[in-house]
View 1 (cartoon, rainbow over the protein chains, first blue to last red):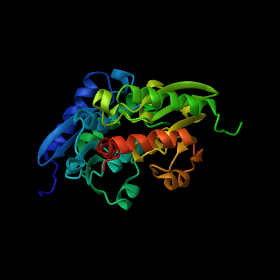
View 2 (cartoon, chains in turn purple, cyan):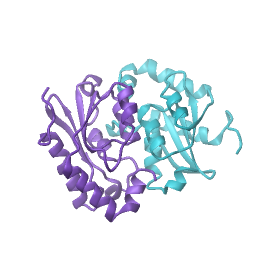
View 3 (cartoon, each protein chain N blue to C red):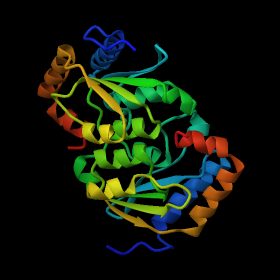
View 4 (spheres, rainbow over the protein chains, first blue to last red):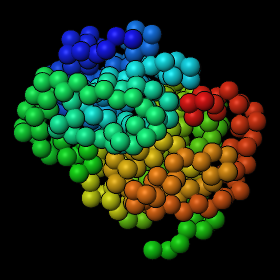
Length: 151
Length: 151
């Protein structure tokens, strides 16, 4: 399997999702679920757009992929522009998604050590565009950001 | 705060949700989110009904409650007919829900020790009706049950 890079096309797809969310007035976090080199689900945070407490980007991407066989999830890689929170990490554990590519974990860091302890391989790209999207958003809407992470 | 009992009205509401799901052809797991003695969200597993990979009962109840303030979640109790899986447990952790009342954990047990290690108080009722609903369902639809827990 090729190493992800800053030009990882799947991370770029997740960033495109984040930007789509921002353009809708939402929180700029995006995600794609990839199986066998194909995007099977893409999504972005929909807290604002749908008044949703559960549609974080990763959840939206996994939901968009529909009902998959266990064998599919076990070959999947979840790409997210931001380090997954407890909810999204738990969802990856439920479905035994073995690998998560994280755009950045500077502005928020989920339970990465716990994911690793459960056998999930994480790669953090420290992608500057992901950092910039979140830094600008958190500065503009700290209230909304706190709500999204339960603070 | 009163101790829950087998006649806990909130667990009964969760069981009613589980039965509603079963009547729709779905997986019989129900949940209610309670704040200050009031049900603020109720739900049941919607895998079959909505083709959903993320609408477990607890997720459905939390989503039904809408966007709540952090202070609300921190006074909340989540009631579920079945021990919450990694996803639903992670969601409780995200929102810092301090207490989960579990109908039963015989037919499935989620990451209860991990929840406790993160400070969540769990109470397991070992409610016979919850056990019966799941035993009958798992016997009838083992394929669907495996799909729901990522097996």
